Length: 440
Image 1: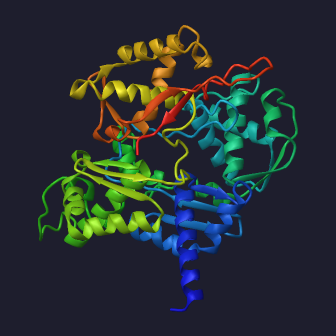
Image 2: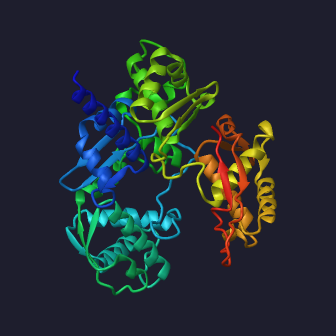
Image 3: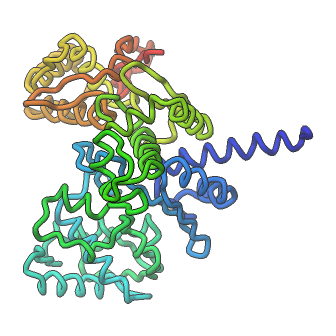
């Protein structure tokens, strides 16, 4: 191979790795929201589609005519998880969607399917009528400010996903003025792609199912064989037509464990099914794990308790850890404490007391958490951050550190030195008061 061919091959490999990590962070990319990532995926489309299909079994839709890319993620074995990743409001608070916003998202999407151009007022009237016609839905009232705010949050989310394009007006103004004129162009294919589950919701009889059972029915993938999730939790058996074949079992084990690893970044062996443990302990399984990590630009840490993916460039996840911010610093402080408690862990009240003491020691730190409920709120956010990264789990009302948390044992918080200045010094920002010295 010539030098030029080598250079081109290296460049393609680097481009594919950046595209994969970018899509893991943002599964829905539009040409307007992230032009660089969109162009990168479009240019390396075949290689990126092949990577996701081979290693994770995920479909990547590249709609160049509509200007968006959609990675249709599917869960691994663990369907019902306490690791919730809600849609978030894209305005200042970034708070998660509540029930009203999820209801409005579904109703708005349904009302957009037969529209091409629509004003915000007409859409609001349609949604009001649809909610009034269904007894199971909450009423939507445009004369209530909180309802208009929720409606605006939903429309802003749909704009960011390319489902609607604002032609004239400002969506945010509707929150304060229901008479404002805003015009949208609708992209029905993008609205259809909002639902990424393998099974159509209309095909699942959810009336007699729990939430977990409904999710499992919606995410069932027949290509892995009959009852593949439950079969993966049992030893392999050949010749049973009611169970997946050995090829299907191996394929599901590969995709399931890699989905968990690339979606969560941490996989503990004691959380895996029988099929998944057999796969990662095999020579082929270890080779595939290492290959997938290498081709996507991750560093794979293999430990006795499991596997951990490290993104050297910190571009693959929206919540890098550790990072700046009071919640991240608080989470590191709690890890230090939890690692001393062993398998017993600590209660939320005990962890809140730990943070309250830290706040007393640093009066200018975490200033937005200085109200009466502030330490509790900070503790909840820090624990949620740790749980989201699978560094702790909750059991019997206690928070217990997982083995992966030991990676941050050597991480410490140090007070930043005061800056010398002849002018009156501004108070340090709460995010900058502590420096994080990360474990290697």
